[in-house]
Image (cartoon, rainbow, N blue to C red):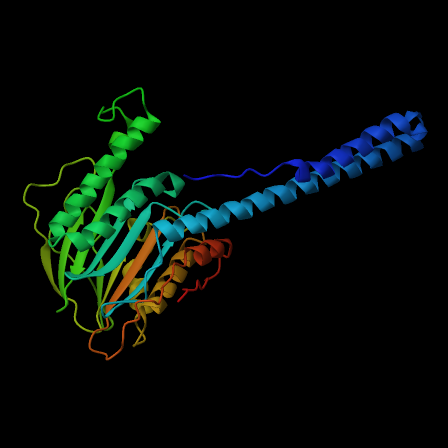
Length: 364
């Protein structure tokens, strides 16, 4: 049971009450306030101006305090729903970041997760229709399902089916809550139009890539300074509007060799436009990011986000998520399960106000 303790408003109301009492007392009790001369009117106006200014500053300070509290709650929600990824998973170096299109928001409609399982490192990248806090419930439902299914299901296809069922269940519950007048399965229900693009992949111990793609952009593969788009055939339809096929088998997309990287992203990265309407050149920006070898996933991430924010003048129109995975096996390094990676969405969001080339930071 959750108990919420409400603060007594007495402390916050004391100062406005005192100011109001001073103004009323001056008007009713001061002889100068009863006079009609110019000097008396000037003094009376000054008194009420001072009282009004004090009230405005008091309200402003209270609103700023509430805004800071709301931002702390949003950051806490983001760390729970879209939790920071560890910098290394079973020999795979990881860096991830998310940027919400809503100014001042820390969460959006993009989702990602990576977990080390006995079946390999399993990753999900998705994009919920819409952005901001409205999509947070869908993100939470899908990520919660993936975190369990990634460990429980031996086949990647069954992981995707678990995600599909979790989305359908969440949309039914949301439809009942938001639109009780019409049925959850009614075609005119606004929730019936919701969909999610999802990319689920698995990196085996030998580097084999197995992928299932439901309407999501294909990731890029970085081999040295070469950047190529991974493509294993036509993607399936997005989750939500259409049922999954009866036969669902993951596609084999070659191997991710030691030193090679995968860059996963949501369509907000490729669809970002500058003031002239030109799309963000993600492949070119990625080639620039890996032109100097060796380069860490965190450096690639910071460079891409900096280039994207510079391209959009600090104001992307859609949520953006980036996830960089590098095969670091065979380097003789030891994985640190307790170390935590981080999300740079807060730094990137703060960088929107700067039209120059910002440099967001990644928390290690």
